[in-house]
Image: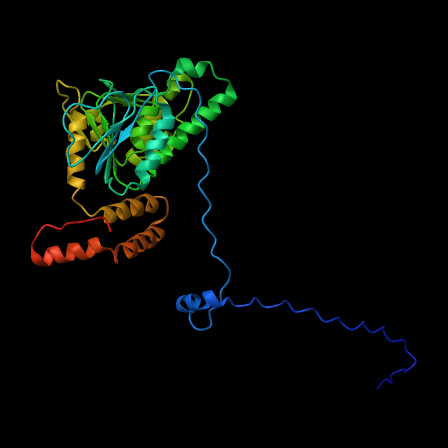
Length: 338
């Protein structure tokens, strides 16, 4: 057994640690303690004022508007956004009222209309149509685009993409009434809507490849989700135009109807479709749209979780109670959107 040499030098000892100062505990606010305890129990403490949501980012400033640019309108329980200058003939249907802008209004007016539609609880359906006979929307003015430099083109397309996203983000169902040509950005506008109705003679296509371009306002993403990847690639690669009957056969539009002498057959069919949606529970319809749109972006398990969250929001509504009561009493329900 080896003996320990007491003369062996030992390692220097570490200096004693200095105690860390304690942080002062936040004082409880007597005026907020009761509300906090109701929310989180007896041990809950006030953690400071709640953060307010940040305001939405400002829209991009509108570029100079050319004459003949789109205008729009909205109103009532079923709203109408048009790309023309005059109110369509005939009285409003389904309790709808209309408000229209005169040209040149441009995309700034459409952005403004969409912003008001989003927060108008009276609006339950939005129908997009054109006041130009034979044309739903023929896309961007290529002569004007030819005068833009590269930076201006990027800005223009980004603003157009934002416009389509705003249309797609409307919480209520949207219907595109395609009574004529819907080419390029015009078809992308229709694809941003939930439902599409077309006249059998209408022409549709993403024709950008025939002009050295590609769809830049959502066409490459929304068309495959509508008709499938293979057919979407074929239509985009070839720039092919198809009529309303062909569009209905491949699922691009929900309904195709023969054109009438007034040139508004698709619009009339869209109003009929809107009248079927109007009597339904508004909040349930909104939650259904949200569940479908968000669920299509994720796997089915995540989609089921989204559906569960949307369903949970609908449970405490007065409309759900009204629907159950109307069923028991064997009468039509009277939904109020709450």
